[in-house]
Length: 112
Image 1 (spheres, rainbow, N blue to C red):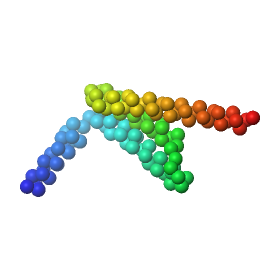
Image 2: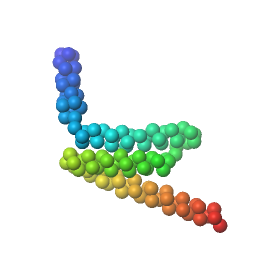
Image 3: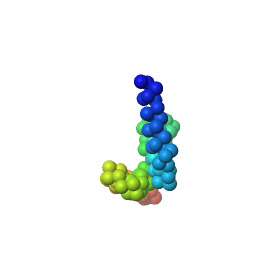
């Protein structure tokens, strides 16, 4: 019985990752890796600072990975991915806008 489950799992993984491998699967995997990299960046930055921080690069990785995942969802016609990433992209853009706005305010305050 256990051997049958192992074989079924092997067949499933082969079908998903090997038999269906094409450009869009590779694109989607790169998008997911880019999206996941943001957590590494955030973790390393927090460890260095000794407190939880969200660096600007976190939002750029979020934006890049999110947009690539959105493109993947559109091409593959995956409504869950399309809706999730389309809405998340607005959050990423808004956070980047707020960071830039606050940096501009801070630099103007320092100039005075």
